[in-house]
Amino acid sequence: MANYYFGIDVSKKTLDVALLKDGAVISSHVIENAPHSIDVFFTSYAKQFQLAGDEAWLCMEHTGIYNYPLLKSLEQSTFKICVEPAVQIKKSQGMARGKSDAVDAVRIAQYAYKNRDSLKIWRPRHANLQRLKALLSQRDLLIKAKLQLEVSTKECDGFLDAQLVKDLVSNSKNSLKAIAKDLQKLEEKVYATVQSDEKLGTLFQRATSVTGIGPITAFHLIVATGGFEQIKNPKKFACHAGVAPFEHKSGTSVRGRTRVSKMADMGMKRLLHMAALSATQCEGELRDYYLRKVVEGKNKMAVLNAVRNKLITRVFVCINQNRDYQKKI
Figure 1 (cartoon, helix red, strand yellow):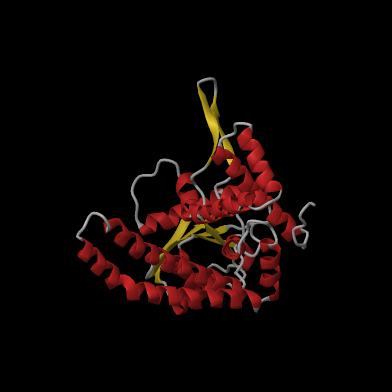
Figure 2: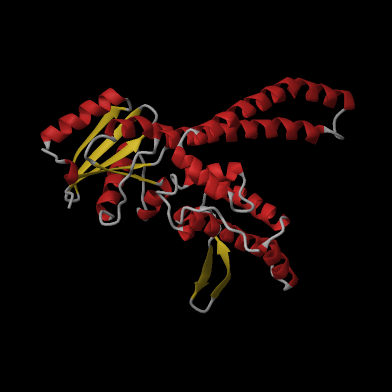
C-alpha cells in the first residue's frame, strides 16, 4: 500500500504541491506549471524521499488544459496518478473554512489518503482520441458563437427600426459565413481523425448503427467514454449523462418523485435528447414504445428519458459485443 500521497492544486501558471506520509503533511512547495520544472521537482523528490513508483499517489483536480503539462510529464513515470472531479473532492471535505492554493493542495492530498482504497489510476488518452476531443470542443465554441450572432439579430426584429435591423444582419453576415466555413473544415478534420484510426472507426460504425444516434452524438459518446474504455457500463454512463433516474425519499415525510440528477454532462444529455427525438420519429420499436406509453398516459418527458436510456443500452451492447445493431423485423 502506498505511504506517500501528493495533493496537487493546479492553476494556469503554478502548481501547489503538498506531500503526506501516513496521513501527516511532511512537505509543501510551489512550482511553475511547465514541463521542465515538473520533471526537476519530482525527480528530486523521488531521490530525497527514496520513492518507488508504487509507493506514491499523485492526486489532482481535473482542470482541463491546465493539467496537460503535469500529466504529459508524468505519463511515463511509475507514480500512481489520480485525476478527480473538483466537485467530488469539495463535497468530501465536509464543512471547510478558508481557501488558498496551499490549503487546497493539502485537502486534495488528504482526500487521496482517505479514499486510498477506491482511487482509480489515470491512464493517458490515445493521441487520436485526444485530438478528437479537442476538435469537438472547438466545434462547440464555433456553434455557440454562430447561435449568439443569429439569435441576437433575430430578437431585434419587430422591436427596433427595420433599417437598423437590416444593418445589424448585414454586419454579422460575413462573420456567419466565416464561421460556417470554419465549421465545415473542422468537421472534415473530425471525420478524417476517426477514419484514420481503425479502432475509432469501428466504434463510430457500431454507435451509428443504432437508430437515432447520428455522427456528432457518436463522436461525443466516444470521447465521453474514453473510447468505451473508461466507462464500459451503460448504467454508469446513464448516470454520467444525467438520464439515470434516482429516488427522492426519506422516512415518512419526504416522498419526492423519482428524478434525474443535475450533476451530469449536460452537453451529452442534450445530444441524447435530440437522438431520442430522432428515434421516435423513425419507424421501429422505439417509436412504437414512445407512442404506446404516451397513450397509456405517461409523461412525455419521462418516456423520452426512457428512450434515452434504451439508446445508451443499445450502443453499449453493440460496442461490448463488437457488432452493429440488428433491427427486429
